[in-house]
Image (cartoon, rainbow, N blue to C red; front, side, top):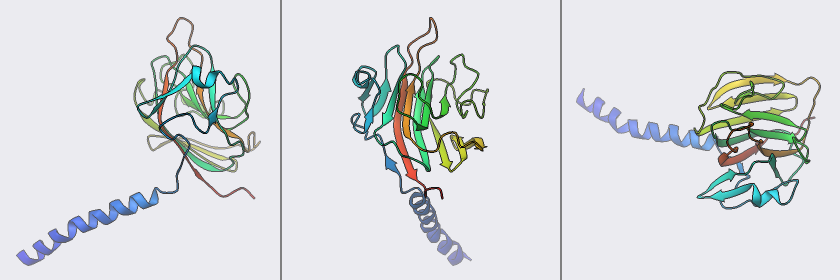
Length: 210
């Protein structure tokens, strides 16, 4: 009996190591859009916004300033993908995880996965803006969380900390390809400047639609 227990005990560490290695292998294939050092690979529609409204400190991407600004990926033909960010929004702040969006001023045309805890907009974090509305606060302000977008053809899913908040098929195929972008929304009247911070911006490409 003691020999059987001893043998089982020896096998346990190996079993857990294999599970962990398998999980790690399953999470490969990600392309890092943010290098953790600078703004390489990104642009703004108004060129002066690039350094006036966005900066990197201690490996974290931050926004600043009072005006609305969007940080766009250089590449503009992303179609199907898994798009993941690790993000934090300040109290009364508002941001968005844009995808398949056009390069342009103001609020660009494209899909937006909302990032909003306490800004006075009923569409909170986890919403697919104007398509699927989440009105409860899923993540408190000033708290790091992960938000994921899986876009495959007209099927769009959003997950917040692994929990699915949106599962939507856009029969109109409103936006089919474009840039990724991160939003700095303008502040609420009398409120603080918006401060969105990101540790990761990464994508995994999926096969093109037929």
